[in-house]
Image (spheres, rainbow, N blue to C red):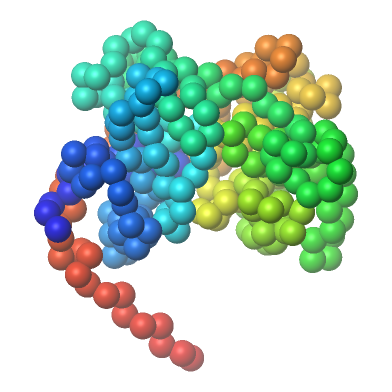
Length: 290
């Protein structure tokens, strides 16, 4: 294996490694991804973005990988970061372009020299067959889910990937860490699900804590922000322009009447470097039983 050139960015503390296909090919083995994302034995990140790849239907194609090596359909922060990377590489300018993902084609716009990116996330759906959620065909709104010792009220949505929005009076990191893993893997979600614990602050603001599918507790998420804001709009708690407050920072989501969502938020360029082959040769030490 040769040295792999990478760039690292974060969107509100949600960080990704970007690798061009020419530096590694289109295929990334799950084990390689896990090693790259490891914060002790690798570079450290919440995922890997592989692109730009050729597309027959858009300007660019992007593959998004979770830190456990699985492939994600869509990531709002990942798309903003990829857009900034394309801008830094001189491949796009401050005008609209399209990116193909497993979760559909999105339109992106880079602004303020790459520091702010807007992504058209597409139409949000609450239909059980599209998310998917087990059971009869329906919009999954204000249903009950019993997890551990608590009954929660939830709504489900898809923005190209599945989400479960838990309605809460108060939210916290502890709440997300305790219940998130069990909701993610609940049998009613056949593809597992991202989980957002949401508190409505007022007509223009919501607060969320996030348990991300295949990644765990996360400081910020663009697709999670979009799903949670869509639920707040759908239920009439908020208007069509919503600021989503997360531990990593804030994103703004705007909705049209058909629930098409446009997300705007910052991207920070962190570093560039080389991953050396010996990183993949080393084995992690075995855990010592206590």
